[in-house]
Amino acid sequence: MQTDIKSLYENELTELMTGFGEPKYRAAQIFRWLHEGVTSFDKMTNVSKKLREKLVENCYISNASIEKKLISSYDDTRKYLFSFFDGETVESVLMKYHHGYTSCISTQAGCKMGCTFCATGQGGFSRNLTASEMLAQIQAEQKDNGIRISNIVLMGMGEPLDNFDNVVRFLRLVSCENGMNIGMRHISLSTCGIVPRIYELADMKLQLTLSVSLHAPNDDIRSRTMPVNKKYPVAQLLDACRYYNAQTGRRISFEYAMIDGVNDSDSCATELGKKLKGMIAHVNLIPVNTVSGTGYRKSKKDRQQSFINILAGYGITATVRRTLGSDINASCGQLRRKNRQDTATIGGE
Image 1 (tube, rainbow, N blue to C red):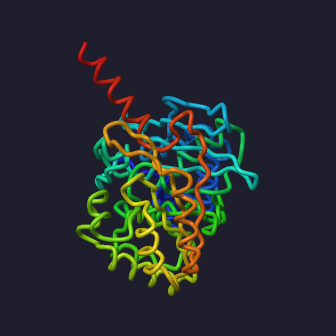
Image 2: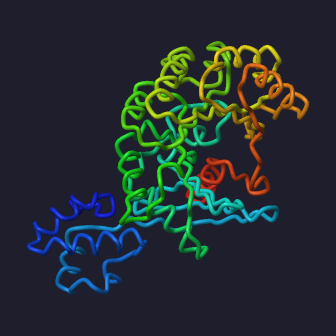
Image 3: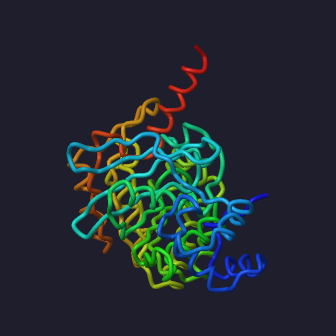
């Protein structure tokens, strides 16, 4: 079996080189090439032909190929459908802000969590992504646009904490000084609330921003929209979040999809405010996306503002997320699902 070389830490790459009978400094050379985004060993011009042949024989480089690209006419947001070596596809979104470029990447092909308002879950789960496949999404976007990405959001397809080991490896690789060198404080990780992994992540003290997809103030509403809540209810989740606060000193961002008539009442806001009071937290209100088959509608603007005002009374800052790429369905899952449907239709003809 060939080695996924771009998923190796530099010390692991050093062990590989010495195993090949090569000097240790070769590891640093190859590591830099991989994190600059080379797509083949032939492009490593300062590496001997003999070593390149050995690498081709024993290793492979994960690449993300662009299958589709949509560009928003409103704000230049770019949505990508990438494919990997096995034909599996994932989505990623490139967003431009005044402070630079942010890439929202996927960590799994599909998702197991089954949140009712999410298009990704409707497409089913295929497999976990490797650390190298996460890196490849960023590198492909940088190459396609001739830019440097400065911020990363793990909020695309999949549940990052359900692919914990690969995600942690990615985080350490992407923030490595000799690699892409994107600092942890420029990375956000979104989770639907896998409680044991939040504790584990907290103990690592990585200094990234934890975003928790809460979407409801109580178990009754949350269990109806997010099946994960039946295993890890709200009280347990918030205890884990307080532990994360204490261990890292980092503010937690609570994602809250505003669904008309479901979770956007004044009583929901009051209950949420009481439960979050005293935490280092921010609530990110997200007008729910229209996804076929769900029947959900986004909350009206007066409901959103009322929610913000009530939370402020409990000392919790809340804002409405700026919508980017609305004309290209920039929320993840919809492009992949359509591509799969089109492929199935073609295959059935």
